[in-house]
Each structure stands twice: as C-alpha cells, then as structure tokens.
Image (cartoon, rainbow, N blue to C red; front, side):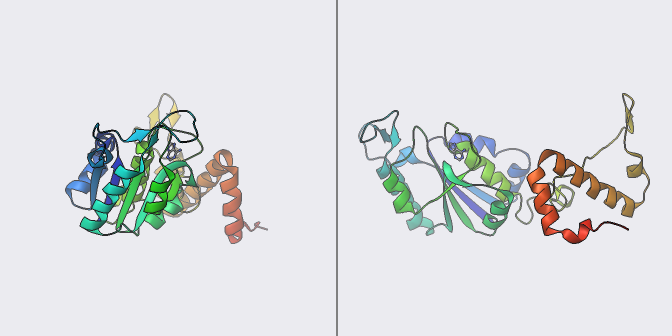
Length: 240
Ligand code: ADE
C-alpha cells in the first residue's frame, strides 16, 4: 500500500478531488491511504494566523515557517520521515510520467502545498523538499498539483487499476501517444469505425494501432516523435 500525506490549508480540496471513481475504490480497498493535515492546526499564533508579509517588502503574504515545521515534526514523530517530501511549486522540476513511475516505487510521500505568495524558505530547507511543478503556468495553490500527482502515481500501484483499465498501452507508456479507439455503434452520422478493427486480424490491428500512434505523436508532439525514432531506429528501417 502506498501512503500519501498532504500538508495544506485546504484539506477538503484534496479529499473531495480524490474521493471519486478509481481513487475512491483504491482507498476503500486499502491500496492507498491519504492523510490530509491542516497546517493551521499547528500554528502557535494566538489568533490562528499562518501567514505574514515578506521581509524586504513585496506583494502578498507568505506562509510562516513555524506551523509547517511543527506539522512535520509531529508527522516524523508518529510515522518517521517520509521517503520523499515534495513541495508543489511552479519553480520546480516538471512532473512527467517518468517521475510518476519513479515515485510509484516509494511507500510514503509527503506533499507540501503552498498558498498565497509562497512559503518561508526556512520551512523548505528544514523539510529538505524537492520542488516539483506540474507545468509552466501559475496556479493559486499547490492543492490541485498535489491531487494531479497523487492520481498519476497512485494509478500505477498494483491493484489500483483493474485489468481492463490497465496502462500498458496508454499514452507515454511506450514513448508514443495513444492510437484512436472506437466502440459501438459501428456507424454514427456516416462516420464508420475503421474496417481493420472489425477484421479480427490481431496482427494487422496491432500494426495499424502502432502506425496511428506514430501519426498522432508526430502531429501533436513532434519532439516526442523524434525521440522515439532516435531510440528505436530498428523500427524505421526503410523496406526495400
Ligand atoms: N503551485 C502553483 N503553481 C504550480 C504549478 N504549476 N505546479 C506546482 N505547484 C504549483
């Protein structure tokens, strides 16, 4: 079972987002556990504040070091240091499927979600965080990035997806994007399902799907296509 702890000021946002469908089933089946910790519960400020203005001036408020470090010390005392501590931040290394696969091997991952304009650097230093971004855009907080990363990591764990939902053939798993798929009806508004998929010839279907994956990848993500070609030159030998 993989364990995710999330430090956040908005635990409901995480819990709500992950309490449906496959993630809900995985938690019920104890294939993964999710523990959201409200950082505010650890503030020693008499008014319950968790943020303050930045030294040196500048816009907005920063999350203060004390509540975050107290929450972390409490976690470490109860459960030991997590295997990985990830700070969701647009400043971080960009999250990709390869990182999801690497993180899926860990038992316990802590996500630290910032809000406002950021977090006092000393909290990041004391927790020895790895900064991870989900892409080159800025969100209002780290909660949605944490949800996205947990979903991507959790679905790779044994027993989270069933066979039908398996990820062997999906986008990125072989370095290509996924081929188009079709289900009933065979014909809809004069659009037909490609004949080959009805042929029952599994070898030909496999070849067609691979070629379609190549076509889609070349069209949508030319840089991925070039990488795939470079890594698999034997698949591109011209037929004489
Ligand atoms: N917090 C705000 N924007 C973010 C991003 N793009 N990735 C991770 N965390 C963030």
